[in-house]
Length: 372
Image (cartoon, rainbow, N blue to C red; front, side, top):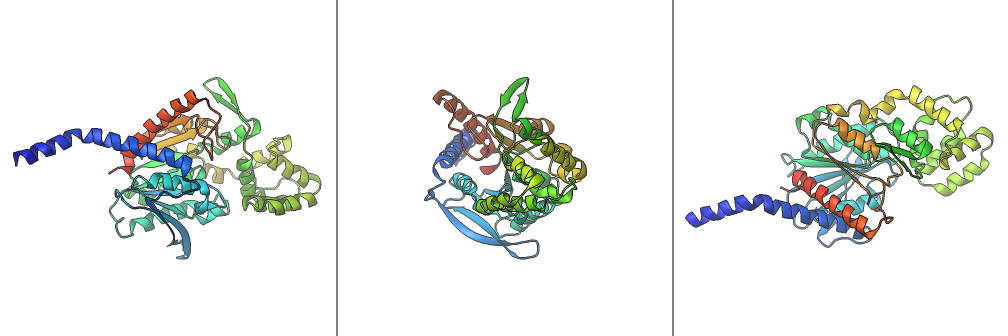
């Protein structure tokens, strides 16, 4: 009895060290997976194409990643605005890289995001899946962790204020490459200029955010001339039907042809800026709904924020602002990340330095939510 008691005390006293080692190991596995699991599946994870009942009880695609040695942790990974949705190769790579640590990972399809429609129904779907998962065998009383990528991060944050999630909150929340204010993100698109504590950083912005913005709001405003052709091109582009979009562009004339070229070439002309001003004026309520600036102060959840300094879709200063407004958050701005991929534009020394920072951050995240 005395030996057993002494053994339990030894284990108890050393548990923090054991958990620290496990969290560091988990972070290393995740980083290794991000580099290696896009084109290969880890043998320790079984992948399943499943479905869940949607808002109208319709079968809705769902990817599930089952670790062979589960530790009991569950993570829901919400995708960003992309036609690929749950099948996006980068999402699958991330899910594999987390599941290798014994974590069951779900990537649900959120139908409005597949169509890149930034409507309030995205929030309904996000909360709906969380509620459904909480009813599934084995998950009724288990804490669930949430993660959101890009625009998915905005909606995950918004979901934290839903009455159901306030009553049954996620164990942890992590967002990557998300925005704080749509308007300031679009200002970055205008000049590619980031002002961080007086240091000016210039990047070449990715036009995708502007394409999505015009796809959502151009049909809701009067810009002074018909834009039906531009809207059709944008619909094809967000569906990644680029050849058809290019053929339609060739048929456009006059103001519409100038406008679509300004959008896809990110030529931030006076006309493009004028129309964006109309969006922010006439669609203000919708834009505020997807801008954490206007509501994130009410979030009490512990939130982990990760952003790349080389992100050309959402400037990293958005996450710095977000972190400053949240009451319980952890922030890492890393030079090793872009929006969709790992950066290769670093010296070996800088890469090692950034890798150590990421390991420290991810270790803390694993201890905070994903390790029992």
